[in-house]
Length: 252
Ligand SMILES: NC(=O)c1ccc[n+]([C@@H]2O[C@H](COP(=O)([O-])OP(=O)(O)OC[C@H]3O[C@@H](n4cnc5c(N)ncnc54)[C@H](O)[C@@H]3O)[C@@H](O)[C@H]2O)c1
Image (cartoon, rainbow, N blue to C red; front, side, top):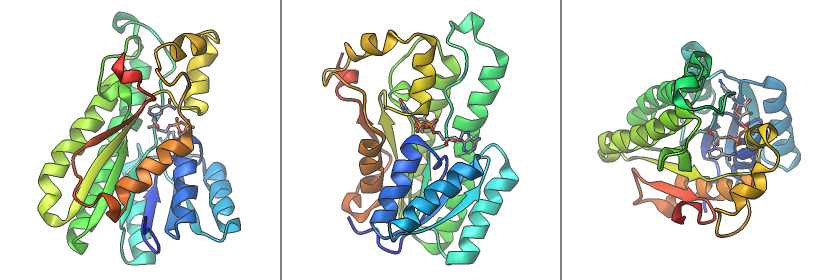
């Protein structure tokens, strides 16, 4: 994969899948903008990349704040004169695992704001830049929950189905501008987000694994590999697609 000197923005890069993705782009020689709402976490990841002889800077961005996303995109363009890749990874799981009638309004608004509106803000702003420069790739981090129904978390399912829809719709619009837009759909992947889900019921982990033919949860670095591949020229005729990484969970 040739990602050397590509300018790459990753949201939610302070932890989990975003962190591993930032580090892998760094290893491949990209200039990584490590963006997260948690500036300390973003700074730490940027330092890890620098220590590994990579190129990175940290930027505090809350993807629900349009002005902050504008600063992220325009600041990157000013510094690097181009944006080759945007990985829209920032996401939250929601606090309440309940059926739809009991789903809280807070959860609905918070999850939709980060997972859906945040991806829209980032795509809207970076696509303007990519259309002007005549190239670019976007990889959105959706979920298996964006491809098949999952109970007790309607806002998360709604937001991830929306990410898949935005990925395909925008890919249709921008193919002729030399811009590819794809999504990864991870199944259960070891991260802070999964820890939060399992904290509600620790025995749930073993139950969930029974529905995964490979018998284990995914790892953040496995998702990172797929994201880097979709962002690279190795996948240069692929657009508007979802790549499922779930150890076979969707087969059950
Ligand atoms: N872990 C899983 O099982 C799993 C499965 C499918 C999809 N995903 C998706 O993968 C993505 C990454 O999740 P993860 O599992 O690595 O979780 P994580 O909690 O480890 O990482 C999420 C990161 O997003 C950041 N973030 C949260 N709100 C933000 C905001 N408003 N603006 C900017 N950054 C914000 C957090 O600070 C954190 O660093 C999410 O979109 C998630 O929905 C995760």
